[in-house]
Length: 370
Image (tube, rainbow, N blue to C red; front, top):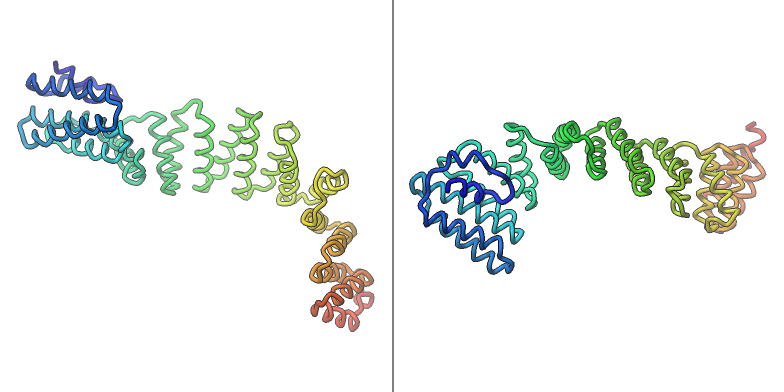
């Protein structure tokens, strides 16, 4: 009969040692516990589950303060009440019942440890990340956890933005996990990045890509993550590789390819790609993309194409500030005629700054400056 108690005690974990340590209980208590367990397994309606939970709590309250057998029975009823609360997804209520069971006097260390772990899981499930993480950390400090325990702790610490603790937990999880899932590798990458371990973060990304090279989402996340690490060259290289393999495709992916080259310090390549795309009609010839092309040429220090591209922008926009910018750029590059023309256009559109620039150039000709 005592081993029946062990089976009742945990619906989610196996128990063996308590069979030897449990005190003998009266037959009516054992039958009532067995009945509660069976009814709970069959209950579907919330009202049924709630009634069983209330019944278990009532019995636990009745047995409070009794002898060793009463205390043991009280703990069993609290465990059943906890399982009923789990049925209705009331994880914090379930955690409170387990905490009360853990506080019952006379429970052995192994039983308290199992309850500690269970309470930690329930509090995490119920959204109490700080308390759940603390309890799970306490349990792992005294017991040999498996990979799932450390991954769970890492996730909780990450949600709390405790990055050093999360890094410690995720490192332990990786050490115990021969083949972590893609989700776990992404979690590890995020934690390592936030903890300042950039090399380890990129290592997680490389493992992801080596495992799932055909998944465009993996390439996108990897490139985006490299960007967040300020590894713009790495982001551009990743995107370029995904594009060349045919995994990344479409106009949006193509335009991001261009922008990544700009961010990575390869503006000449960005300009080459964008110019061809606009001329071939691959991308809509919008004013915004013309500004991007002009910016790419300017960053590449290709003065002739840059000046022509900015002039194209000014002609299309018809704005004084664009003509002013062309004039300032031309003046800075010693292009007197181009500067005078652009500044005059800006002045005619009402730019006071252009007027001041023209006065300055009249007094300080660019040809004289050279």
